[in-house]
Length: 419
Image (tube, rainbow, N blue to C red; front, side, top):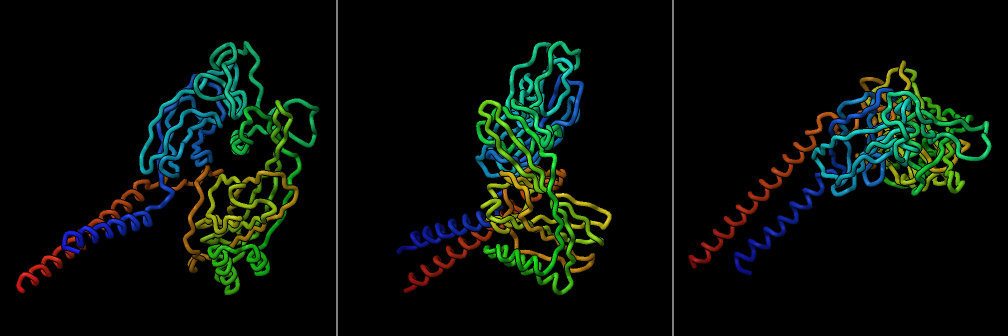
């Protein structure tokens, strides 16, 4: 093999090495921003919900509370994925995900029947009103939404369709709740009613070594096993303090008026308030396979880390005061009348070493019910700068190695020429 072939082969190997390092250091879930201005002809307002869906999954959302304004949403995803910008579930536009970039889009919404208040049940883009949270229809006669009522307003999607009224169920009117539950409607359901069962089910949880040990029986993934072992150790040596929690189940019913088909969704709400000020709060939810076989069968408004896909998930808070009450929730794609999940919550007192788990890859981000800061929303340029610095460092190492190889081969060639 002559000198030129050696150099070429060595550079090829270094290029492969550089590509592998680059792939390892750049996170697979990267940020993007969508921003712009919106206008409407509506004067009577309640809060609407602007949503970003990535590859069909709700990634983030923001409230729309005034007639005209600007919006700015940071969300995560993968290059090439289809991004859908929606108002209360009604699609405004779509575009391809392009990491570390900003997509600008200005849009209008919508004319309503006279006297119709802007709610998620009655509004969408392109000059139409929304006949349901997922289907748009033509404007009712009478034009814009500030005048007198010349035609009856469109029916709310949460009004029951057909059949006798059921005293056990009540219509859902909260726009955020409508948006979250409706996002999990079966594919192809263009119009449906949404109702909530009047009875909720609650159960209290208090952290103990026995509960953690029982939870470890469901853990098989190394990340989940390691984290639960750390939790058990911290509770045993007193570095962690258990936090009592209440888990409440609320059942929703979605009815298709065309087919009469009914499906159910269950909201699992976790509420906790520590007895003393705590830091590094860890909330671990162990969900049996009888409830959901994987995280794909769950919907999370507040994004957790996935310790195990079948499924054990984890949320964190930097600090919670004793006077505070925190709430997290997720949705199960079936009806649940009894609490079957396990909720483990613990934190450390101020000044103590926090419980640290090994880094875990998060699931695709979704909207935060409590409007927590989404990934990269603050300091969004920091990941870009870190990425660029790392790439420059790798290129410098690559160039230095190439120069050293060339010098080595040149000196070796000179030695042979002496003989």
